[in-house]
Image (cartoon, rainbow, N blue to C red; front, side, top):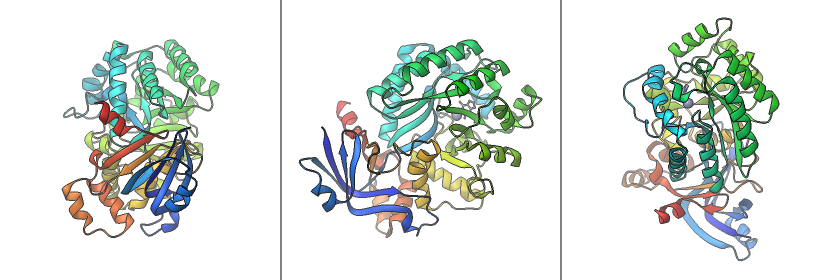
Length: 438
Ligand code: GUN
Ligand code: ZN
């Protein structure tokens, strides 16, 4: 039995915070502790109380730093690490010019494994302990990712993309091979350790109706699985989709028609939805995934977070980096850009809500809040430790900071990987271990 006691300022959300003064929305201990036993959280609360149950646990003192649940990134592309920061294109040109050619390289399993390793290193360095990830079309790219994730005992959701048209031959499968490969990957990886498989038709443009049928069949055969795809990111994409599926009422209708909308369906972007589409997504309980750095970088548009959240039929929302359309691996940087996008829509996101979203909110949207996203007893010990004084500028700003909400907002606005002191994955120190090995 490995037992470790973390001492620090513990923070875990209980529900959506209505304002920066909504103290009932979270559990916070100024001198707090988390007891981690065999990869799970065994106790949490005031240090004196938790220490009394800790026996001879190894004590790691993180004071004065904040101890939070690890961050969750609900949409990211592993094969795009080497095309992040590709200049000058909107979505469809960016895909054709940079993304698809880059993804052809993932036919090489060794390349896939190298990038998977470096990708998960980056996640840990940035405090992210769970992702919902797109691999390339190649079965071996998903195998490489799951193997790497399993070896690290991380809870990750991933799938090979299904795509059989409107892209170069090197990144195309067929309806049948996409079905067969997905099926084999589900059998091998879904539920192995902490790995979860997501059925991943890339988007309507790169799938024929025959392949969409296959994706729907996979969804029917495996009702507990996540499904991830892209929806309504860019106007040219929407117009092209309408040409390819002329019978559809709108873009969302395509996914609806093939039975792909459910409570575990993650819809990347959802920027330009009509009211009927929002209603349909809400009724199915599917999730709109907000990727602010990507939406700004590709000039796709401004996700209307508060309108979606507050409408009569509200949308479930998650946030994500969408690397490599997104421009930063950090969920702190992502929420900073989210704040600005929401401000451009005339609203504000309070700092507590921001951290709720990053942790419990994203976990609830991914239907994994029973495992991660909080510091609740019995959940997996995936934890990030943050330092709001990580840089000289942050230290100086902290001199004028009084409340917890102000400190969190500073961390979000000025923070990045430098603010991540340590990361625990299933109770084991992952960042310092990685740094020492380097
Ligand atoms: N739509 C289809 N594929 C992609 C992708 O890789 N990135 C983004 N941002 N949008 C997409
Ligand atoms: Zn994407």
